[in-house]
Amino acid sequence: MMMTTAGLQGELVRLVAPEPDRDAELLAKWSRDAEYLRLLDSDPARQWSVKKYKEWIEKDLDKERTDDFFFLIQALTDDADKKWRPIGFVGLGGIRWTHGDAWVGIGIGEREYWGKGCGTEAMRMILRFAFDELNLHRVSLTVFEYNVRAIRSYEKAGFKVEGKLRQLMRRDGRRWDLIFMGILKEDWRNDYDYTCT
Image (cartoon, rainbow, N blue to C red; front, side, top):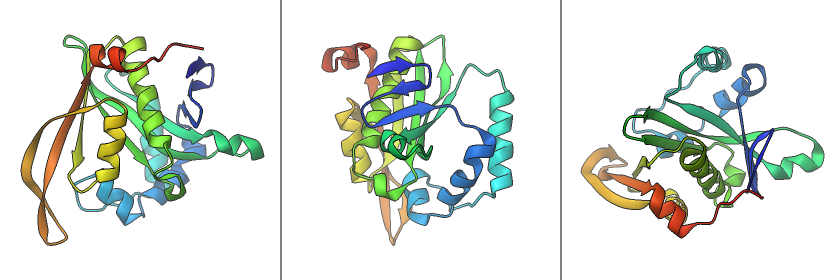
């Protein structure tokens, strides 16, 4: 994994800044995928228009906030045909600099990239960014009990289950737990070698 001028880059994906004109339509498309939304959020599915996504990206880019970082995930396989295409997003939010902690969120909107390792690699890159570039101490996330693929991916990236809110959510006629996972900088350093190449 290496730092490049284009953003963070790995073997499968790179992380890049969003651009309103380029990315709003794709983000709106993902918001129309009910399964993607069910894996991403506990709220009822809510679709956003292309215009709304464009405004959201523009507003986010105009802010000089230092408590969140948002990237789009681009598959490197797209480089062969010179076609830029984001497949998902990853971001750090709610950073508390005094304590050195943040929350991470990730979503792969393009289904053909589900289960291919792209999300795991993107998570590893955002952790490297969090711990090496931002000097954070801890990164946390939540995941729904039924999202087994995501839980496995987070464990591969080094996250540990730290607790749960039992039966928090009702979906498909049953109750599901919300699982809390976290990773500390020292655990990440001990388990993984992310030196720049």
